[in-house]
Length: 262
Image (cartoon, rainbow, N blue to C red; front, top):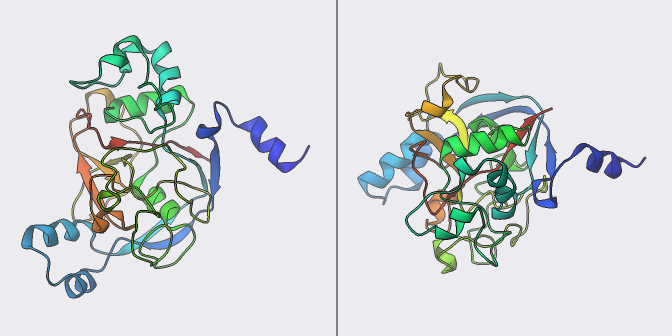
């Protein structure tokens, strides 16, 4: 059997849930404070404070793993909701999900208005998990050392990703833009993506990603989100950019993708 056929035999679900093998390795995660202050000297104090969340730059070691090629779509999540209706997306204007149905015509858009707990539940149902923050950044880099964005160092533009500068104002279908060298899509823009990690800013030198806590359904500590969204500027599209989000707070621009240990 050919390698591709073996891979497809291993994978389950629709094409948008396909897993891509990400080689592990050692890399420098985050940013250097002095470099950020010099490069973005004109930023406001509040914006600079947000940048400091990605310091200090530190060594991260990641073992090989699998990551989903795309963000989890409405169609893929609807399969989960059919079997687990208690986890359907929640929000003031989401009457369509009351019947377990995704928005008509947006089946291949990333699912949003999901809590971190719902993302964890979906990942477990699929036999997967949420990525660690270190895995996510390594995957976003696509094997490029020091690149600013998943596609390289060229500035963001409407044809590279869905962000505030694109003027779209909402999520678009996954794989609408070119992927990185690992064949991963939408690692900048479209929707923010949950990681398993608790939020710590700046980075805690002694912190190591922990296993999912046994009481994850009751988690209240903010979680890391990565990748930026359709609503943010170029600064949040960088591979080192990081923000936090309440685990129980669904939002219109926060989604996720799954990972799997190799």
